Image (cartoon, rainbow over all chains, first blue to last red; front, side, top):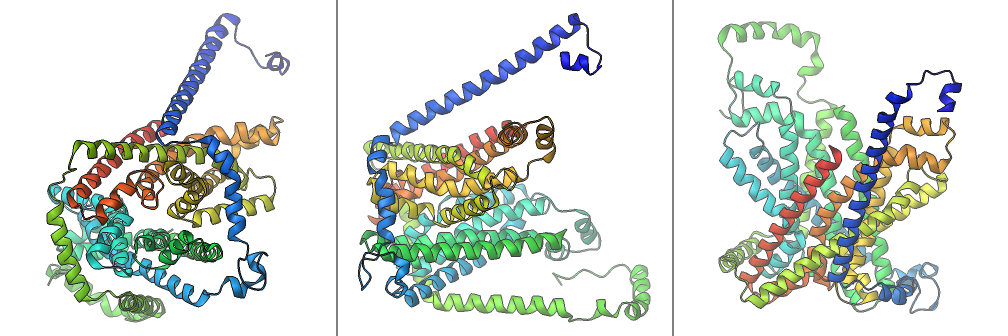
Length: 300
Length: 290
């Protein structure tokens, strides 16, 4: 405060200043209490969760070096002329199954593409049906919303597990699982976009005599298409990751080879497959980000 | 005639049609049926459809398989209703597994949040030490993100053994990547002015972050952590399939032994649990933002 006085700023008289300072101090004390209370609650929940989940910090410390040991083993050649050296020093030996794996990756990408496309088509329609400003019947909206919610909440791996038993092994159950989950997720996102559109074109089309399909086609779709496409691309990115692991339950793609390699301790194959999966995911992520940015710019 | 606009009443329509030749003369490009953009869109649509049919053929999506499969699904659906856990012992073990699932999601998410905060700072343009550090952190985060939580679960089961601890570590590691990226984007979007104020008042780099960035950004980060907690509850329900604890193992077992009433019971409980968590988390997020 002496600094303020030195700068020539007028000071409040002490009697008026004291309650203000007290109020600030009380507020800060209350904020500090709230902070420590929340921290305490979080800590208590964490300890409870740790007990339930059998977290054993000791085990992590003793076996912690295994984490790095595991990755070191992944990256050390096990067979061939250069056994014992780093995997990248003998790419021919390390990537022996490259052709087969690239085919599987192609299948995985196709699975994600077909599943996303089929799910997006259904989600498009159901998204329109569940939007409050487009569909008048509250009962219809409620039913559609519950269907979308169910498809979205049940993880696609669970759908894949059931579909593998119904449809047999192979990529078909995987595609269906991805399609249904995408249908639920995109349906909800689409309905949110539709609920935020400008209603004037809609009113204009209805006033000119358009029925529901014509109104949707001319007044709604042009406004929402860039947003739909952006969400669709994002969902494709997520589904590529999902398709890669659906093979764990027999639903095709590169996941099947990966889980086999991990369980049979083919360490170098695990490293190769993980590298291929990571590279694919990064490529798809970058590609879809670029496309999404172009869509957003077009909209603005 | 659905899908086309009905004709307008006569005077307006007549007037518009009368103006048509003049408009066509002034703006010939707007009346051309095909131009370069439309051609591009059409070709894209064609390529997309071709890829779709290629995919359907290559992945074995045949009508006969679909028909038999759907018949099976209908049969299973009949067996799934009404949901029936079978015995009270089953119910207890299912509830225990659900509690394990929540615990895995909780510890994994919040542990990852603690680690992702410093990493996110390093990966943000306005809070990092050096451009190279930022580049490396971003690539490491992308690499970790690229590996799905289920794959991490397999790896951790190999290191610490079967059980929920591997699940916690799997969610923890995969979330460091996702939360790290999301945190860094939020930090980069922080308002410049508080930071400039701190620096102008003589604050060091650390003070700039502590007083200039964090107070504004922490509620946003907390909201995102809650959002990802919701998402992780869903992921935790399935990592049990590879032995990393939670309800996933139970569910996979019941599906594989075709105990359909128990399967539908478990799915029902999962739906309820996720709905409750979504509700609670949504309320907390509103209180953080509001």
